Length: 227
Length: 390
Image (cartoon, rainbow over all chains, first blue to last red):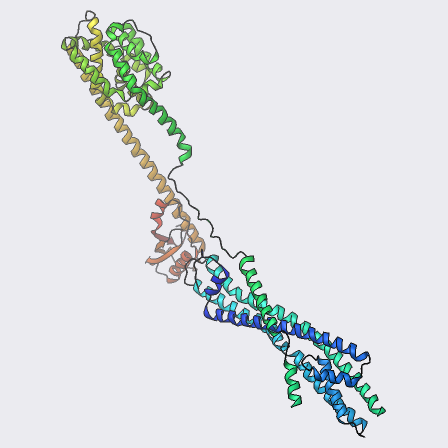
């Protein structure tokens, strides 16, 4: 750490002159921030797409399209399918497997089981990385604080060697130490906001999927009773 | 098979790269904001340069500047005057009598002429010159200051031109000058002997000494012995010129002149001696007064220290007699007690300890603010009596 006061206190100078632990903390925080932002955007796109596909599928489903045609479309373009479409596909496939003279209760049980499995998978996919955002949001301030405390400790320790202690001697050390806190907050704040937002989005989607599953099982049960 | 493919498909996520790019973009924006948005430049405060002046230059400078200008002007003037005066002096023979009351710059010369020519005007001149020179024309006086060295030369030349025969005549007029002078001198100033010389100077157009005489009586006394011969020479020379015209006026008495001269010198020497003695006495008195004042001050502070320490002593009760404890106390500047050493015990350890505790308790001790006086308190003996009154 440099105690020269008249130096240029640019951001890069401060980061460069920080002690190694502080620099490591800063690097960690930078990576966490980058990754969390990457996840934020990924989740944003994914959830937005999921909502959009769910909307579209529900529209087509309730418009009264033939379920067989719908199933074939979903199975044909699986990559393009949304979560709800996949849940429908899984359930309908299970339903069609047991047609000839089977017990309705058993058919519906297996169908529901298949749909729930698909739902779980979809929810797992949607909720993936949200835990990382939560971790970054809750931990990175502490990590930044650790870097700050370490930096301030160092700057005060160097102060003890000086006979005349002025604020100018401590200021650069504290400034560079506080950069760690700033970075921690910079990583944490968006992560927390994104986490809360995506958590509520996924929970909304989950309720939509669950309600769709119930409705689909009802439709399939009626259809089985007709057979 | 089918299921695994379906699972794989489920994990293909849209916009992975786009998200990464956006994340990078966000950080770049943030760092750009940090670097350029905030002014991280720490402008070092401009260093203050403090000049320590031994004395204040601005208020004083103007005054010397004026003085210098008034002096420098004369410096420029002297040549002209020095030239003009000699011219007057060389030519005066013809003009001297005529040009009695010309411009002020010429006055001194004309006065000399008057004095030499007439004995009565001499008295007037002797009385007048001082006020005239002091009040109306300080410039010529200053201006003349550098010139005297030039003048004598010129006058000496004149002397050589007009040799000894005039000398006798030249010495004659002097008594005339000196005899009338004593009267004005006594009336004008308390110191009789130095002034005649100054007046002679005035008459000989050397007003500088007169100025000094008017302002500082002491230096004049010191100067005369050196300046006198020149003045006398000058007077002689000038008088010589004039006397060439008025040789018939007075019959000289050389021996009288010389005697008077000697007397004068003796008087001056005595006067100088007396003056010096007086100064020495005054200095001695001053020093003595200063010493007594210092002693008073020291005594005062010692009493204060005693009082302070005494106020803090927790006296052990019921000691017989009046034991005395003596300590050697070493102080730091500021009155803090550095060290206390017991020099003479009172015979009662309780009392000794009580005094020592009190000394340390009463730090800082009252000490004089004067640094020279503090030397007395750097290391001093302190005696404390058990009973105050005794």
